[in-house]
Image (cartoon, rainbow, N blue to C red):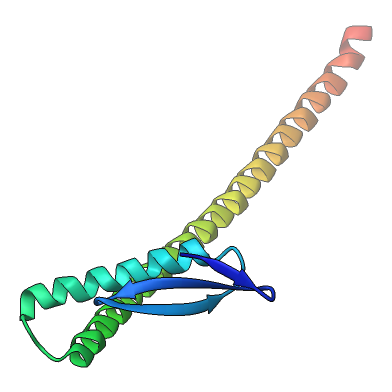
Length: 129
């Protein structure tokens, strides 16, 4: 249940059956409630697997499990960023290669045009005669 006073928002959440009141930035209440619900759900999952164990131990296990999820997400993000960088590098190399091919083609067209002009120049005196 969000509350706001003195420019600071407060939200009440329940984690592992205990109510906590947390301060947060105004507008962040729903996000804090959602994150708290995820923590509560993780604790519930672990409690279902490990049974009745010390509440602090269960909370620490949930924190480590969530940290592991975050580390895995960081690894996936780093992999995606590396893949994007590789694709950008490949695209730049392809642009350079296309530019080089375009320059080669332009040079070939210019050479052909010069040869045509030379043939025309050679034929012009004989046509005028």
